Amino acid sequence: MKLLIVGLGSMGKRRARLAKGIDAAIQIVGVDTAEGRRAEQRVHHRVGQDVGVRVPIQLADEAYPSIAEAVAAAHPDAALVCTAPLSHAAVIGELLDNGLPVFTELNLVRDGYAENMAKAAEKQLPLFLSSTMLYRRETQYIKQQVAAFGKPVHYIYHIGQYLPDWHPWENYKNFFVGNARTGGVREIFGIDLPWLLDAFGDVESVTVQKDTISDLGLPYPDCVTLLLRHKGGAQGVLAADVVSRKAVRSFECFGDGIHLFWEGNPKALYEFRDGDKQPVDTYASFEHDSRYSDNIVENAYVDELTNFFAVLKGEEQPRWSFEKDLKAIELMDKIENS
Image 1 (cartoon, helix red, strand yellow):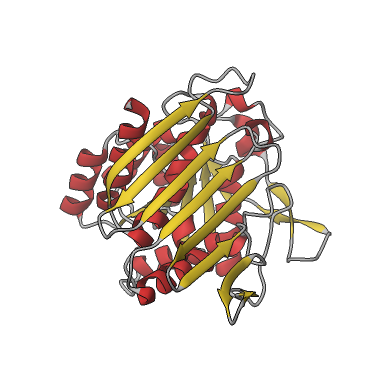
Image 2 (cartoon, rainbow, N blue to C red):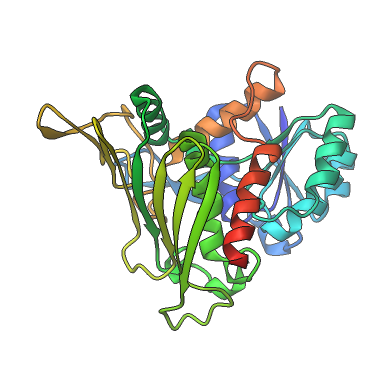
């Protein structure tokens, strides 16, 4: 298979590396308007969980400045959109016009949703939307336990990380989290609301508290706390911020007969049973990229790409969709407009 990756920044590099790890025969065709990124032929990354050696791999077999040139020269079979969110609508539309199945990273905004959903349906092309937290085995375990419990639960969830630490290699004001429409707090909600909606159901009401407590100079509040009531009876407190100096993902779910704890990484999922807090093993092994916090593991990205490749073969259905994502975007818009 020949895979077109539009956007050769950090996420495009990650997707290229992981795609080749899934199937070494996959050919990567890159598109980026930046000449420096196109010229970059190797990316260094850490291999495995405990191996400190960074080895070079080929990033892309070919690279072009535009989608039109890449399609004409390379004839790819499918495309990944790894550009900044506000560019997605136009990029997705152009790829669909060229008859390509599309995998896209988080959109965060509804720009082009109706048009691109209609275009994909008309052309009978897969339109696959990333939601990596749905592929974390910890979130799936939580969902299964809550469903098996069968009674209302409450949860408390805090997610935060100091915004300059998100991409230490670049200024936070120079990539999309510095934009008011696609800011860091909205990005957190875009990442985590899908699995919360999947596990606990649609939200029927939300109470919002916002604040700015940093000197980061952002065009949006840097701390937002929500009280969410789900239609099935679950209720949650969700706090998101971009000021926590230690990256944190702290989740606790409780009810009369269930108590789950998760500190955001595969080694820190627990349930209370037999009078004690017991660890839950969800991964036999996992890969972590040392450039990111311990709460980010590569396995979920691999599982997500594997799902996309199976969708292309007609063997599986995606776990998330543009239709489902509209509910999350509507909720994010409601939060911002409160």
